[in-house]
Length: 295
Image (cartoon, rainbow, N blue to C red; front, side):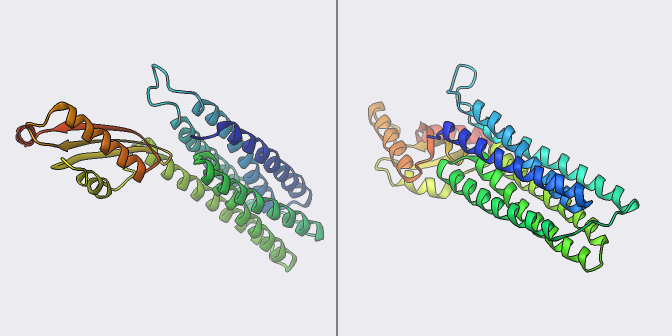
């Protein structure tokens, strides 16, 4: 079970760090007229925006199941990840637009030692944020924290790119500042696509567990003749499963129920993240009848 209160506290803590980094980059970027540092500042600002979206998503996800949401509200956290991807796409578009404008109205950045100190400090903070979020996300099975750690990881790459850009400008290659902005745009957009792809797997009910592994467990239960129509869906920490199991036609209902409970118990032991299993008991004769109708 996820500790949503702890996830909220982590997101608030990370939000403060992200916006501190963003303000430092944006203020100093405008001061030295560096388009790549400004772009990186907006990237860091989007980190904070994604934290807010995450907080909203986690607040909804923490609600228990009710009459309208019989499977609970956990997918709201995944939906929040989609919104983070949308924010990234908007940021990428704005950075690209700013870079194109600078291409036609170029300005040479004023690079000094403080530029490198600022970027060095922000990289160190981002490394801490990325590792901290990822470790906590894995421990708490939180899509939001894991997705946000990817976001912070991309911030490290873009910041390193800005440092390379500043060195290039200092060596007499000012156009590198604009070129880096285009690369940062690519980093931001590709990260949004990655988050969107992972979130869509959950929202579109992509299979979570290989059917062969489940089939092997079920067939190992005494009294089971076979199984089919195995389906899994949901999040990695909240897997729902249903399957059809074949037993002898003359088997007593009590015995069939005992087999069903044994199947559930063995599956949950093998896959602890499975929270709901529906076992449909069938006889071979009924299976043949329905198969002919399907054909």
